[in-house]
Image 1 (cartoon, rainbow, N blue to C red):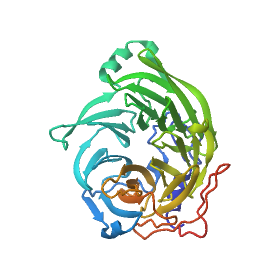
Image 2 (image 1 turned 90 degrees about the vertical axis):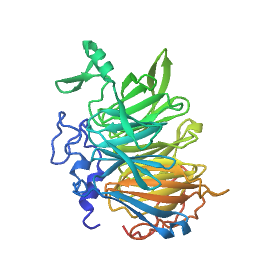
Image 3 (image 1 turned 45 degrees about the horizontal axis):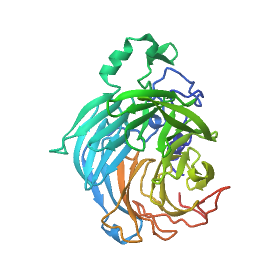
Image 4 (image 1 turned 180 degrees about the vertical axis):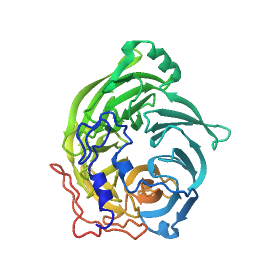
Length: 439
């Protein structure tokens, strides 16, 4: 492990949020500390500013000949990539530079800037773009129908009107830190993740303030705020049957059931799927809604099967450092890690096989986005375009096939890694990288 060992240590422990009740080694816990102060991200050597701002795309011309391969890299030396969202030929990237960049066909297409800090989450709904920020705010943007490259802010959640109306009643204030109060409709710490419900009428936002909130998109009203965890919430996802899953730095994955109460909602805690020492860092649901995956700071990926009453399906063992992001598409699952790699897993029932390990990033892989590759997919060979954002300030673009043979290569800046082995159903549907590896 060379000069990256200090960075690896930063990402092995993921409990440094302002909500954390545990002190970091050598750093006493301060409940009044802002989430951006002393967090693993900001303290990391990867988090250094640069004066350069020129966009660059590097294409790998031999990519089409490989089944799982690197198509190219998008680099704009202005900030570390914390969030991604993709829709057809458009890619949105969020960074700590406060800029959201829009790429079309892998070329810079547009961009817009927010004054509200690091962009931790981006999700799309039609011409609307929702972004979650380090300062606890959610911004809403809208692209012009006549000229899609023109994107303007159309609102904020909560709206100024609702903030004003709520501020009149003292009962609308809740305690958020020692001797500090805030309106219940506002997040008091970084918005770490966003997602929609099944029919995209509701928006869920989760935060390092330990709460998740439910927003009605038709009128931008906050319907509910749920105090869900004992530490920062790192991920929220929804599933069919009105199920909501939250994963936290407190080491738990919780299941919530949404019920409609007139025009409002009520979420009740159904069960806790996981309780462990390691922080839960990422969640993902496959597109049929049959499986939910959980990534942790110990490098493991657990999964549960809805059709079996959310029973534990197994563990995928493919990373030596924290899993920071997860995406599921078709029969594939992608896990990005602080070890700078992306594991591509193929599911057959509850058996998961590691098809390849995508390498090439020089920093932790912080976010992933996946889109179907309609142009290159063939009958019996579904292909996917995978975007990976990293703290090395780049986005890499990969072509991945569901039919790639076991042990295929992941091409990257310094060549690929080979992975081969067996997979066992749970009691552990495990997939361990066997043999010596060149870390």
